[in-house]
Length: 443
Image 1 (cartoon, helix red, strand yellow):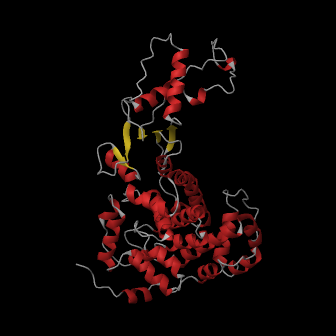
Image 2: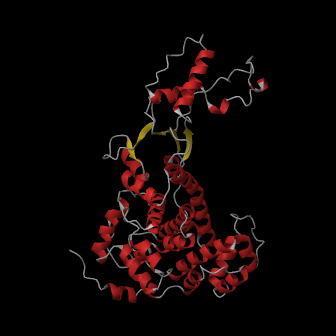
């Protein structure tokens, strides 16, 4: 049974009833070409945010530790756009620091929010929509959660067990009668945030909605969730994903290039939040120390980006094309025809083909321009046209085959394939947009 909540009263009584003034000044200035002096005058009115900007400029992240003593110098080092974005984030964090939340971790909330803003801005650049508007939308997309989870509630197992966005939204409707994105819409309307930003936020959970900003935030939100919520399970299907890419005029290759930049952006976002925080450990998330071997038909697969965002060190093995493999394999077979240990090449067994290719001809040992330094090969009489003897592949504990048939592995390895058939979960098959929760379920 749903609780009877007076949402208007709830909003009016919240610390968020009035927006942070510094945040609103920056948002109103987005269409202006402010000079560093002008942005400094806006920021300088808030001593707390000024101190945060100076901490960031003096952090090891930028290499100027202890050398930046004035706001003007900090702005020149960081750049107006970065300062503006950090100011919006830090003013929002400062404005809500007195909130006590139930069932969600405030540090993870802000890391998630900051990453969605950064990821949205990056994707907006790529698909040619306003990146400043995308950053603001990403920063404010979950603001309604602060209203919902500041209400006293029982500790729910939902947040410590695998859950999807749909599960969370249903929980929020039980607690507050409204899901968080609708509460965000109500609050931001009260703040007089531009309608285009509110519309993007209102529909960012709907993969069928055609608003480009909504699509951008949805993608950014999916990536951020797998970083900040170890129990998150994505509900994004392949047809819905392809539909989104089509609507924002992005092909799979360009999307994968975008995704490849996100692990580094994640590390940078964590460092920036740690720098501006008075209590840096709050923003640190648990890092995974294990490695993963990814065998992929793609040179730059989405699965590699996801694994790195989950904290894995990834060894990727891939042929550029099946045709190139066959030509190279045949060439080497011809050169080493006297080697009786070589088995006939089976062009129908893709997995074995790639495994044999990788085991036999490791790209790291290829000769550059036909030259070979024999001094580096002990006891060898290898000529300049031969290959250096290769060591077997070092398989990590976790092995994932992406668009490649799995092959037999050494004992003790966990082997999974990516499921691109949009079918229900199968044994040893990961969804194409997998998470830590999916890896645990299959372990």
